[in-house]
Image (tube, rainbow, N blue to C red):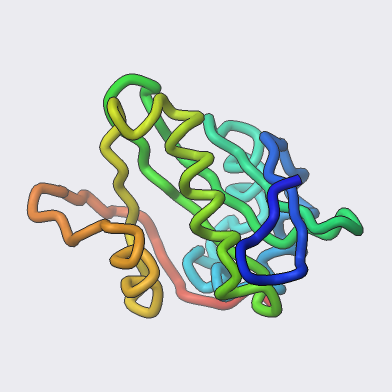
Length: 152
C-alpha cells in the first residue's frame, strides 16, 4: 500500500486489467466520462480496457476503485496517457500524481520517456503542477464521428 501524503486514506496502485463494466461504473464516479463519444461507446470501451499497454488502478483499503490510468507507449521513448481519472470524493489527495508517476516508471522511466496527454481544459492546472507544458509539435487527424455525452 502506498500512503497518500497528508491524509489518512491509504491506497494501492497496481497493474490491473479492468473489465468494461468495472471501468464504465468507475467513469460514473469521475469527470472523465465526458471525454468519450457516444458512438459505439460500450464496444470501444471493451477494446480499450482489453488492449491498452499500460493499465493501472488505485484501490482503497476496502478494495474500491478510486483511480485509473491508461497509457500507450513504445517502452523506449514516449508514453501517451489516454485516461487518468480519480473518483470525485478522492480528488486532490495525490492519487492522480501517484498514478502518473507509476505509469511513467512502467513505460521506461523519466530518464527515457517523454510524456504526452490531451488535457481537458479543467485538468490543465493539474498537469501543469506535474511540470507538463503545452506542446507545439502534436498533429491531429480526426475523421471519427463524435457526439459528446457524459457517462451517467
